[in-house]
Each structure stands twice: as C-alpha cells, then as structure tokens.
Image (cartoon, rainbow, N blue to C red):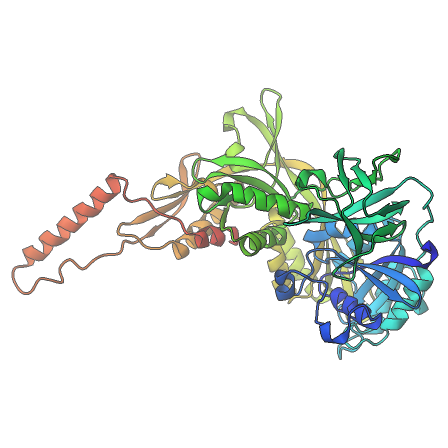
Length: 596
C-alpha cells in the first residue's frame, strides 16, 4: 500500500546534527534496539566517525505507527552536495534542519534550493534547542525569511536528548505526500547509489518508481544495456535485510551478480528484460569536477591495484572523475577531478585505509580553456599540457558565484580576504534584524582562489562563524603562467603549477620555503628554485650535512686539517657531477606544498 509509505531525507549545513537526529529516529521507531545503539550509526565509514562528518548518503527503512518511513541521511559539506542531489531525486519530502545556536548557514540555503528544484515538501525543524546558547526566536526569524513559512510551522527538537523527535516523525507522516501508486505500470527503478561486494559483485541502492521487482527476475539496465538477474532484493535497516520483493514507492537494494563495475551506473534505470519500460527515468545531471590533481602510486608496481581501487571508489562516489596520465617524473598514474579540497583529502585517506595504497598527489589545479593563435581551443587540467607561450592567444579560467554567511561584526575581515583573492563584490543581504545581525555576502571569485586554503582562512578571519557555498558561474580571461619547481637543478614535474603572473613571486617564495622546511638534508647543498620560462623568481638553499673529517686529528700543523677539508669538498663536488646528488622527495614535502 503506497499510501502508507513516506520517503524523506534530512538536509542541513555541516555539523547541524543530521546524523544525531537520524540516530534518534532509529531509536524512537525501534529500528535499532538500545543495546546495539551507538552515535552516528548511519555513518558507516571509520573516517566519518572520526571527523564527525557525513560523506556518503545512507538509506534506512523504519516502521512507525503503521507507516513505512524510508529515510536517506545526507552529507552537509559543499564538496559532497552531489550526494544530496541524488538523495533528493529518490524522496518526496525533506526535513530542513537548522542548528538553533548557529542559525541558517550557506549550505542550508544551497541544499534548500536543490530540494525546491525537485518540488519536495519542506519541513522546517530547529535542532539543538537544549543548548544553553540556543536562540530559537532569532533562528525562527531567519527560517521564515528564507522559506516564507509561519512561525507555528517550524518544529523544535533536540537530536541529543530526543525532545520533540516524535513530533517531527508525526509531521513527516502528515505532511510528506505518499508516492504515486504505479504498480500496474512497467517496472522502473532508479539507481541512486551503488557499492562493490567481493562475493556478490555490484549492489545497487534503488528507488522503485513503477511496478515491482522480485527475486529471480531477469533485469535490464537501460543505460548500460547490461542484463542480469535479481539474486537478492530487500531493504536497509540499516544493515541489508532480504525481502524477496520491492514494490513501487519503496527504496532498497538489488544484488544483480554483475561483476563489471561499468555495468551498474548511478542514475541508470532498471527494468524487466521481457517487459521493458519505454523510457528511462531522468537520471542525474553530469557532475562537473572543480579541482584536478594527479594521483600516482608511490610504488610503480601497484598501478593496476590503484586502478581497481579507484573503480570501486567511483562506484561508491559517482562525483569522482579520473583518466590515465603519464608523467616523466612519476610514471603512470591518473588525472583525477574532485568537487573540492575536502573531497581530494577524503579520497586520499580512503585509498590508504580501505586499499592500503600510498600515493603521491600533484598540486591541485583547475581546468583552463586555452585559445591558440591558430584558432584551436583546448581544455587543460594539468600544467604539463600547457602549450608554448608563442602559441597561446589567451587563457580563460573558471569563476564561481560564492555566498558567504557571516555575523556583521566580521564583514570587514571577510571583504578584505575576498578582495585579496581577486573576488568581485556583488551585494549584501541581511538574514536577521536586531543587535547580532547576520549577512549573506554575494561574490564572483576565481576558482583558483578557492581551491587551496580559502576555507581555512575564511574560518580564521571570522573566528569560525562564517560559512560558504559556491557554484560555477562562467569562464573569464586570465593572465596565467606556468611555474616550475627545481630541486638540485632538476625540474620536479609533480610540483609544477599554473599561477597568476602578478602573484608568481609570492607563491614561488611560499613553495620554496615550505620545501626548505620539509626536505631532508643531504651530504651536499640542495638548491630549491621556482622558475618561469627558465628565469628564477624565488630560491632557497638547504646546507649540506658535514661529516667531521678532522675528528681523528690530534695536534700537528693546521695544513693537515685544511688538506682533509679540501679533500671532502672535492668529494662533494664529484658527487654532484656524477649525478649521485639526486634528491628523493618524501610524500610529506608534496603534502606541504599541497597545503601551502
């Protein structure tokens, strides 16, 4: 009975208590008994538990007062907004959760817009009302300003203590519409997530839109044109529970037995092989990576393992983009596209933990459009692909629309930071009135300004109060040059980067200084230089480790001491000339430049 089903998700800014509220839902509905209950139950990865952030969407089915409630817990960080957009396509309603102490923040607004685009029913809820610094009236005013609801429509709860949680579940049942009953239509199921199981192959998380799927059915994946059989089917509670059937309006999992990762794609439609549906479900818009970095194995012989690991991560993280790349210095690897720096960091960490693969990541860059003098156009994602200066007519770089929400006391600091990063001010909106006003500043800013340490700097200039969201705007002309980093007079390809000409000296100085601090000393002097077109714009030296060759001397003429020192000097010179002065660059040095 579809009229007894409610599909909903929780959307909010990072750290507003989504996962804690989801824990209380599981407790109140009796889905998990108290002895198995733990914090952040739906955050299944170690890294999610440690950092206290949600990275992956997680579905779960709950039974409450005769209704079937299908919840999808979603991430809050801007780098994982693609996970949110996928969850929204599989539900009819969304709980808009706002922290009663922090108020409406940038990602709250961004996720709300995504939900409005999907025509979802929005239930505004204030969380953390038990905190001593909670300000429910001020936050309620911000929510009313944002979605135009009445004060009595805003629910209050505490995910920590459980206060108000049954009322939130009651509103979900009352306000969220049930799925449309289309069980007589031809079977269609939307794949909104998938993961790989070593024993059972690719497992797809699906939302049944039309018809039904049963164990043993022969199925067809309409996008990839692959065929399979339903070996197992059921729902998440939150562990996988076999049911033998999924009816329209329900969410659950399908085990197809397919081992090829490319056959089961997120956004694809599953139908029955004998009675195929006429049209595919509208999938998801193709995600555009924003930050590109080269990923190379530390050891050349684990390249194939790295490829398999990335295929499995791609299945679990459909916003990841990668293509093979070869570097003279680092060998075979991949050019990977990410949605932001946190996405890149989490990806590296997951490779290390889940697959035990150590990698070297090159300095992140953005995709530039190159217009050549002969009329050709190309998009480059790596400094190594930049053509000769003589062949370039002009270069265009991506610009973003950035919304920053900040208390009015910090507006000056934030404006100073954005101006420093070449941002163009548009306008300011005030979200609340009274003594402690909060403003939303709108800017256009080059993506290259955002991808390194902008978010960290924003937090420090606003004492941690500012929040931001960004979206792609367009491409604009830029005066960009390629900077090479030379260590011991050899160019290190992995550290090459594209920089604005007017900031080349300061960026080069920062990089050589961070390398000077992280590179280990050798038996000879190491020169570290930043160069543009062969011209050195910044340089540092790491002095040599000196063995005390005069330690064995006792007494005698000073010329004996000088003779030994001269001999040592000649040896060091010979070492450099014979090429034994090669410097092995540790991963920490690459990371120091990454985080400069």
